[in-house]
Length: 498
Image (spheres, rainbow, N blue to C red):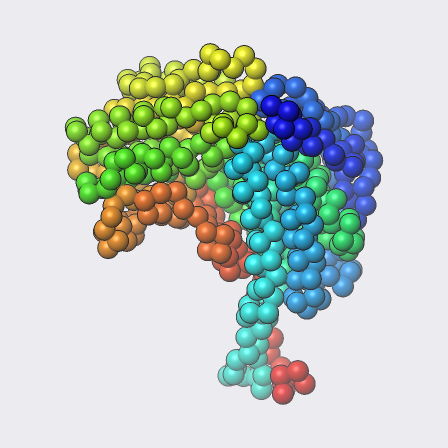
């Protein structure tokens, strides 16, 4: 237990929690408000941050605008900007365990998982740095009415990046890395519930001497987020969060023809084909649902399987795996499932569980706060059987450790049920037949489909169909939204192209 406490205590090493990172330096906020960040496992405040006021957000936007309009940053060669991405990657790698500790305390992710996940973030910056030398930044053509023609990819401008509390650093990296490589400048709005890792990122930006105004890091609540979205000096919004807020952002940004990408909610299905191995599927589904206590937008929370024996076998298999998961202190190596991030999130999930019972689903296991844990926002691993796909728990995003097993008439009906949702972020198909897996994957209406488990790849774009989002993040697809195409027609070829 001493080691657990020692690791937990390392998460209090922020240098400037009372300041905001604007225009390359740490500045005192315009107001005097502070906000306490609470350890989700102990319910104790473990540090305070300064609150961003509208005046502070205005200053951050102005700094980013100035850096884009009047500094050399957007006109550097991509390879020159890639040098800064590699420096950010090195700094994050050196402080990855510290960042993981923040993530665990703020959101309940197990420390073992957090370390493994955050250790991959530097590679994302390096991936985009590598694209500097391989991406087609300028395409030369033979125009009909000019001697020389080229399509040039240029930075879109000032980017407002807004990330949620569940996985703030990785989701920020998906926005910041391609934006900086493209030549954009960024105002990063950190979640007020979980800003620690992003303040570390700002400290690294200061350490490496990233040019002033290129990356600005503030926090704040709805008022300053709306200010960022509405401000005409911001050319693009990159947002991850709920579909409800995403629709509002699209409406506001669209009114001024601002660009936006939205990675939104999900209600993803695990489609178990009749030849799928029940035990293996149950193990894979249960394992992914432990990730951040089910607080993952791509989580496979709907398990769709043929009714009767197959349904009952899946319920039993999930009960013997997910139902026996060890819940406890997320810093304890033996823990498989930590708390949810917030008191209001715990209350919301428990309310959804009661709705599931009221609407006729059969509660198989879990459904309560663990009796042995008096403090922390914990929820037992929960499984519902015989869930109607039209019910609340099958249609709305719970964001907690709750699985719904939904019976289908047959495989064809299972595919229909999987698609019968307003969301379309992620799905999975379970079968040992690769050809059948591909055929079903093509019929599932979601941005990602995994085979025999929850799968993502940072070098391939991810995003959603329907109300799960607009655009893609990750991979080459994730760079395009930060660029505008410009057609250049000249009377002769410039020297560099001769």
